[in-house]
Amino acid sequence: AGLSELVDGGNTFEGKTIILDDDIDLYQVDENGEAVCFNPIGSYRKETPFKGIFDGQNHTVKNLNQNTWALDNGYYYGDLGLGLFGKVEDATVKNLVMDNANISGESAICGVVAGTAYGDCTFENITVKMFHLGYLLLLDKMEDKEETCGNHAAKLLHDVQARGIKTSVDVVSESSGHFAEVVVPTLKYCNYIIINEIESCQVSGNTPRDEN
Image 1 (tube, rainbow, N blue to C red):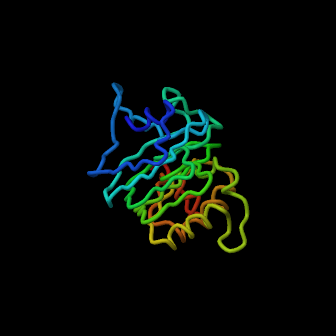
Image 2 (tube, rainbow, N blue to C red):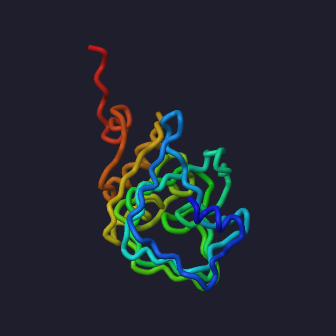
Image 3 (tube, one colour):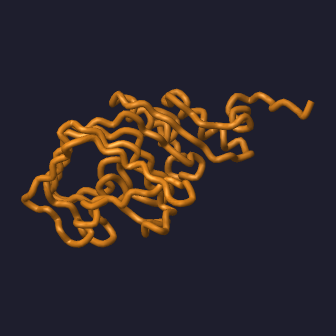
């Protein structure tokens, strides 16, 4: 969080190199036991980009957590630039492993490593172990038809798996036939799916058991 504060304060680190000396676990909880959101390094909204070199030395950053409804961190519906880095410009990020990153919400531009990148940026030797697509059926653009995989959610998961990354999906309950229309094409490209018994019946066509 210290680096985030320095960049938000106007230090772009242009011409300088930040070296990660050890693995970092970003998981924290607040007084209510809720996971704390990580403030990105560099901000799109504040126009404070990171412009230096970030060398992870093949260390792991795990448990990055962010969402667009975390008002305490100043991120809300329609904000841009979520990720480990919110905004990079003419920067290099390299030799880094990202594990168990969770970025959720809607109407935000985000990426596990960088939400927005401007100018001549370089990303090299970066490993991501798992990609999670959350709130399917609240992501209108992901539901749009797509020729090769059925819809854009399925195409995204297909492309992620093609890079050797495991995928997972969770969904929002919906009682119409639209549920299966959106969810079924994604199953082929999903390593894990998080659904309840009602949702699984909507996908399979089975009837939930009655009260007897």
